[in-house]
Length: 232
Image (cartoon, rainbow, N blue to C red; front, side, top):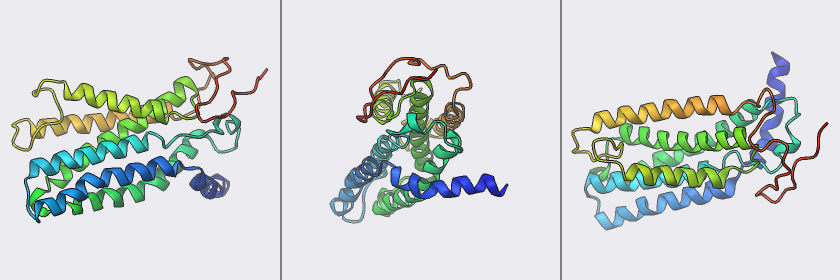
């Protein structure tokens, strides 16, 4: 047990330094901008419909940043380290989660009380968006051995968002506070979060057979690193 805990503890400093802080910080700053701008414009009051839209936009921007969480230009050179991929990915998520919770809490508090939608419901939506971004990134790593899946995962998240916006109101999880389907829509958000967690759990471990969609190809990393070395 002591040995099992020793390796993850030793990985904390290098994992912290290897995190993609630039896209995460940029997403955090951009996500706050519309929420912060709404406070002086509202004069301390406002409507919850505007607040809900702004928080949804902030959650989407944060999700785009989280899509880069698994970016690791050295992934192909660290596949044989003693600590397995789920532990390394879990450490990344554990290090980012506390700042993310603080960031989201601050975003909620930046809105005037009169513009703030139900915190629990909108936080569930934000968790569903974040989970979807992480699931897309994990799936890209699993299926394509992608060292830097962030760009593709971010595009996938934006494409899914656009598709959801085109859904009929009765099927869309993005409903207004006055909509009769508000409670049912957040049942869908809970299901989205569960599915995203399952996809993460399935895709984070290393493939047992080593078969991937791009296995055997010398793929150039989008991060600028060279392709994987040949193995017998």
